[in-house]
Length: 84
Image (cartoon, rainbow, N blue to C red; front, side, top):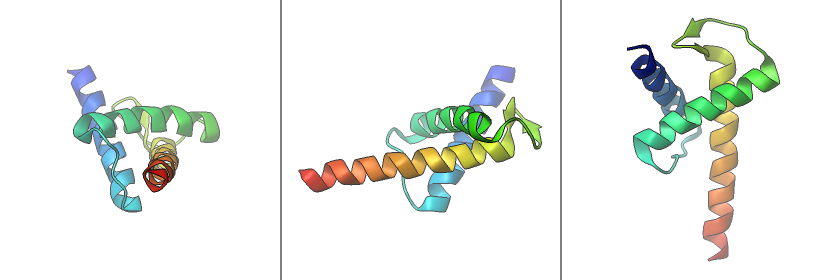
């Protein structure tokens, strides 16, 4: 049950980051989960481990990391689409 909860929280973090930036992560729900996981890892590297923990994620650094990730992926996708 803990793994499912972690997937759910990761998906919500990725979805909220995409919603805030008005950008979509390719891959739908799976893409949001991946963005949440990578965002949590990136946020922990940049900001450390602080704030409330839900589903194994430090929510504030994970959310900030997911925002950074969605921003970078959005810029890369826009660049690739613009070239073609």
